[in-house]
Amino acid sequence: MLGQRARGSGPTVFVTTMLHGNEPAGARAFQRVFGDIERNETAVHGEIVGVAGNLAAHDAGRRFFQDDLNRIWTPERVSALRAQDPAHDAAEEIEQRAILAELDAALGRARGPFIVLDLHTTSGESPPFALMSDVLRNRPYAFALPVPVILGLEETVDGTLLEYVTELGHCAVVVESGRHDDPASLDRHVAVIWLLLERAGIVASDDLPDVAGWRPSLADAARGLPRVVEVVQHHKIKPGENFVMVRTDFVGFQSVRRGEVLGRDQFHEHKAKHDGLLLMPRYQPEGDDGFFVVRRVHRFWLWLSRRVRRRGSWLRFLPGVSRHPTLARTFVVRPPARWFVLQMFHLFGYRKRRREGDVWTFTKRKERL
Ligand SMILES: [Zn+2]
Image (cartoon, rainbow, N blue to C red):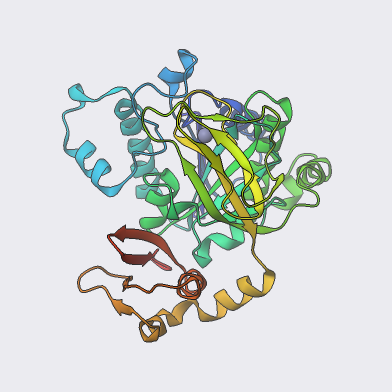
């Protein structure tokens, strides 16, 4: 626990930091914001909580020991952890249990909307950006930040805290603020925390310190970038692959062309499969995300998706599509599943895709509690 302050009934902003031990900027940013709130006795309407994630890995100068602490939040892993004797916890399970206890307690106290803000930094140079699950309730918070918003990460990454919180029916926004050791990453996280507290109504606009200076500096760092993008490729590193980027100077959001070689291992070259923008090129030894390629999402799509979001039952009329016999909010898609079908599922908010043989299933996050 980094700090907790509550007054009256209102929203909760639960800030998680350092889920990766080598990313301390978020924890320092929370301490700075919390220190200001305490020193200035800033009026708080609702609750603000901050926790630091992988403390043991941080102390050892590591990202994690056994498990990536941001990949073990599947419902199965969390249930297993709750049932397990704490004496048998592995390194990251000790940390996860501590976060879960704070999260459960904060959810128990919550009397209003509950928003998790999960703060990260990247190994390569990158402008700041936000990630969210594509449910409408997340949009006001993610779009309150003057940075690009990434959709569709949950299609390819399992077990994130973001996904766990979203599945519980609450709001979650992840922010990647820049390179791990860039001092600007810390400043941007400070700005992000204040802006989210303002958007949630926990701190009044008039009570934000020096806000005139912060909002533009965050916006300047993301100037010229698209407002919303979606993931079209995720290069996941397989066990035993010695993955490296082919250049040392790739940066987040740089344009890449289809067919361009981005990474390689001892067996293969790994190319961009689409024209788009490169995201999170990996320049650290740990973790299994090689790189992502993202593509701009148009405003019209966002508008349209808001309008149609509650009419997903229409999807069953698409060719090859039927409701899943047992799973809620899930459709089964049989071949020939075309690009058009995939786009329609995205529009209606169905982004969790699984594949068994040539059959796909698409699941939507709960829009409401
Ligand atoms: Zn991280």
